[in-house]
Amino acid sequence: MEPIRAMTFDMLAQASAGLGPWEVFAQYGAIGGFVIILGLAVRVLYNRAAEDLNYHRTRADRLEEELRALNATVRNEYVSTIGKATEAISDALAALESTRRGR
Image 1 (cartoon, rainbow, N blue to C red):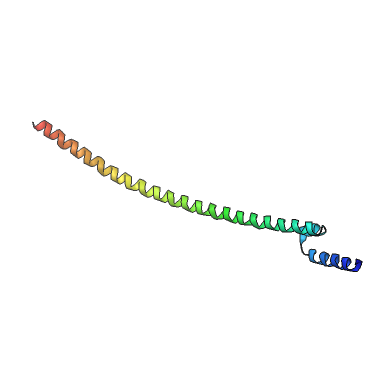
Image 2 (image 1 turned 180 degrees about the vertical axis):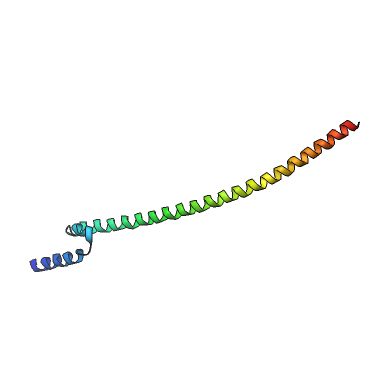
């Protein structure tokens, strides 16, 4: 039984050689393997969350820029419309004033 156990530990040591910082956990057997799997899962989930955050920041920046452009367009349209409306009101007031004086 001892040679099989030694062979199993040798196989585990060879398999864990490429794990880098996770290599320490491979020495603990099944519990270490479970910790390695959990650690890798957390790493994958963290990377996904970071990618989502970058995507949403980029999207928000793009939409804010579109909103600024739209606000500038609306502002320019309002300025010309308000100018025309002011002229129309002053013309109407002048016409009313001239009719009052004509009476």
